[in-house]
Amino acid sequence: MGRNSTAWCLIVAASVTGGCAATDAAQSIPTTTPISVASANHSSPAAPTTTSGSVPEALSPCGEIGSSAKSPDCRLRSHDAVGASFEVRRGTLGGKTTIAIDVYGSDGVRTQTLTERNVAHPSDPILRDVDGDGRDELLVPIHLATVNTRFAVYHASGDAIEFHRAGELTGIGIDTTADGYVVSPMRDDYASWNIEFWRITGNTLAPIVTAQVRLRDTEAGAPTASDCTVVDAGGLHTTGLSSLDEARDRFCAEPSVQRVVRR
Image (cartoon, rainbow, N blue to C red; front, side, top):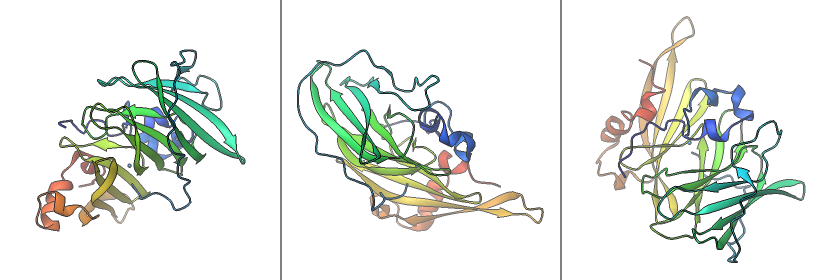
């Protein structure tokens, strides 16, 4: 679980190759890199199916788009102990983009097909261990807004091969704290951030607290200071902290928050 929060933008550089480049999201992500609850209009993925087949090797690795205006079909391979592989294919259903992801075990047998419908994001899925448990999560960008991206998060526990849709995260990227919180820094506007802290409990993303950072302008109009407060998102009781004041001292000090705080 011990893992530094150095992956501040764990996802944006890998996942936002086009649309986010002109936005504030581009400021954040080194090599890899946040959340609102899922939109009510989101279509739930189809139930996983179990079949057999060999891992196709003809597809290019995800992220290698080259000069293509649209992400091609591609493949992923996790580097955790389970070593699952993924084949990503795009299609159209009712005029909407659909992504189907076949999951393969290390033996080359296909175990599931994960489906995301109504996808409105040009970038490829990526693999990252965002909760520090040693297993890669599958992160699928499904919607691109002006600044923030919404990700579908798929999680597998222990040595299990089956992935479960844990929920959705929205923000400029996804970060991880040293003690295993999943962090999604979401920018509301140029002077307002909601930085949400989550846990993956079982196979479900559970909100813990939200650090709210509000920048304050000087007379010249440049933000030179900020305020950080913490609100209970439903999981404060799981943190071992007895008050929101303690939570403020704890979570406002996190590197993911300090990066947007002005003094």
